[in-house]
Amino acid sequence: MTGAAAEGRERLYLFDTTLRDGAQTNGVDFTVADKLRVLALLDRLGVDYVEAGYPGANPTDTQLFAEKHDAKARVTAFGMTKRPGRSASNDPGVAALLAANADAICFVAKSSAYQVRVALETTKEENLASIRESVEAAIAAGREALVDCEHFFDGFKEDPDFALACARTAYEAGARWVVLCDTNGGTLPHEVEAIVAEVVKVVPGTNVGIHAHNDTEQAVANSLAAVRAGARQIQGTLNGLGERCGNANLCSLIPTLLLKKDFAERFDIGVGEEALGELVHVSRTLDEMLNRAPDRHAPYVGESAFATKAGIHASAILKDPATYEHVAPEKVGNRRRVMVSDQAGRSNVLSELERLGVPVDRKDPRIARLLDEVKEREALGYSYEAADASFALLARRMLGSVPDYFAVERFKVNVERRYNAQGELVTVAEAIVKVKVDDETLISAAEGNGPVNALDVALRKDLGKYQPFISGLHLTDYRVRVLNGGTEAVTRVLIESADETGDRWTTVGVSPNIIDASFEALLDSITWKLLKEGAPA
Image 1: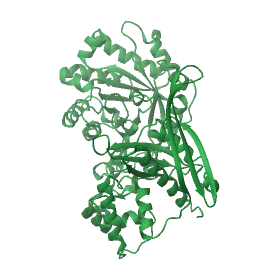
Image 2: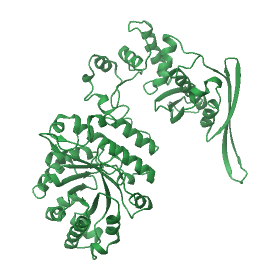
Image 3: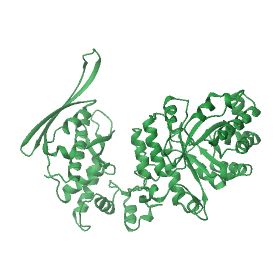
Image 4: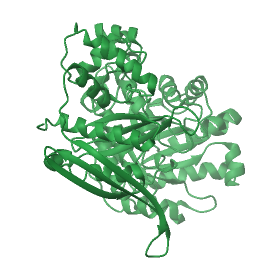
């Protein structure tokens, strides 16, 4: 249930700061188009507030807030309270916030006596005046006001009276939300719960929020502890983006709030069951936009979140998934993965074959031979737990057949370091591939930014009648691992591929020669795509 709080439940509000605090992540650089796309994702998800940026701080955010945004969520502008020694009406930062097309304004204010003394070099009284006058200016302009009480928990431990005075001043000036920030991320859950319990004696919990950083891996736990103590707004980011170690991860918090009894029975949030089922999609979409590899081990949304490797676990899961799953993966848009590896049992193999759509009789004696083959090949360096498509091809070849769509008669890769026409020293990789499709021989050549890339481009450049089937195929990840030392080391290559439908699969190749290992994985990737599309042999 979304919107107004369900009968008998309290309303808990979600505030997303992916586009502001998350933008401080190393390697993250949002364009205006990126921000608008993420804003749309968050709006469909159902968060209550989207902090879209800091108008006046950079051209991107200034441009973003120059336009109105059609969103159900309250689009929020972030900025500082007025500077000490000047009025709110004469502060350019406050002016930029008031001029922004935003539903709400979130002011950041020091709430630590130490920070006021050292960082701001001003007095406690002037700091309180900055909070009060900034909030009053926002309300006078018809905006909802929030105050992020920066360094609140550290400040409370040092001088609780001043920290509480900052929170009280913001609330009494009219702030809708007084947000307690664990800015340095060093506070522990029991401390958060105890301190928030003191704050809600001064400011009603329905006006108190929590903004936790993850420097001790406690941001999600700290957010939940604050809610238990009375806070009713949680700030966080998708995938836990944020400076240093990141912020509280909304991709972990949202399903916990909806699926765990202690919270689900007490609170109503703006995210419904249908939107929850899109959580994995939202998480992966953001990673793709930022060209980041998804965290395979992320709770709820990671590829390994519902993965089982041990044979005895797989056997139990096939009987009842609840034996090793705390929630159903489908609830968040994820899926169960029973992996095949050298630790696998018959149950792992049967489960993975069923998921991959490989028809098989459970009593087929070839299953045991397939399991033995997997273990022998993994001893050579293969890893099928991370290469589902290569496993499916191996299984189909042992249990039935895989069409011989094409045959690679030869390939050549050349890497040359030379001067180009501009006199610059460059390294150029070129590849030539000779392929036979039916009775037709096809030769393709291509350049790439490395030998594997050149080989990939050449191989997919012309496959004759099969070209339409692979036109949407592209590689999304390439990983290499050296399995033993020395100049004759065996190399394992894992290639992740995707197509125009959004489907993804991984293939593996192993060889002392990295080019051979890469080519083996590339061939499996193309073959799996053709098989998946039902291409005629």
